[in-house]
Image (cartoon, rainbow, N blue to C red; front, side, top):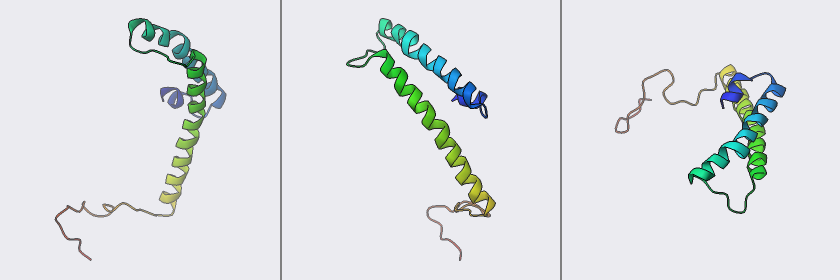
Length: 98
């Protein structure tokens, strides 16, 4: 997530930085975890971890961008679904005033 934060708006820098960090985890850090007995791969190779992490890294910014766009649309159209907007929160045992 920090990679996404520091490379926001520079897609190719995000791809390169994320690929390097994912490769470091899959091929170096995960081997250290195996030697320490923290993690063990069964029927999975290290490059499978790399492919999975890289695939997820392309889904994450797309979903964040889509959520941001939808959120901004709601703000632009004053479409507030929050029951607390404009008033204090409604308590469980309290009746709502009409």
